[in-house]
Length: 113
Length: 116
Image (cartoon, rainbow over all chains, first blue to last red; front, side):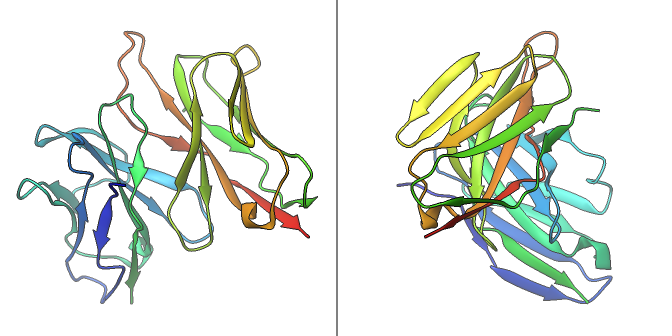
């Protein structure tokens, strides 16, 4: 069964450093999403992406964040200058259409020291 | 501000019992509703979705939607210890023109424990 994959599973970084989280969505899906979950808190929407551009973003998704589909399979989330409060699980998801179910990847645990 | 609320629990039921998980949401606009299960340290895993008022059954799971009361629930019949997890309710809203932007708004989740 097709699945969303994410790398790395765990990323440790120093405050102020740039990180890139990578995702490979399900191959025939067209819509891609990033969510995050701070430990013990709700899953929060960050951004949705379709046709090589952002469809919607939350207030969390400020200028420190960017997304890119660098090739036909990868979808990345870049955090330019990490803060302590960026420590969270970051989940990538994909869906065939906007109305379809979103399938989540296993997540990347980001720890900012 | 569109909100999704769940009782965080924990909800404890004996093996074989029916577990009932509830979710309310704040805005009457057109929506789709999703139930996800999340084991500790893992990602959300889809259980089922519901779009229309009434009940929808899938194996041991039944989702119930009442749009007038802004309420959606998940029933788990014959609960098993392996069902012990956090259950997340998620809502996808559409705008007045019926366009969905894909964003899922999650509740805080209900922790379910099924004890043998």
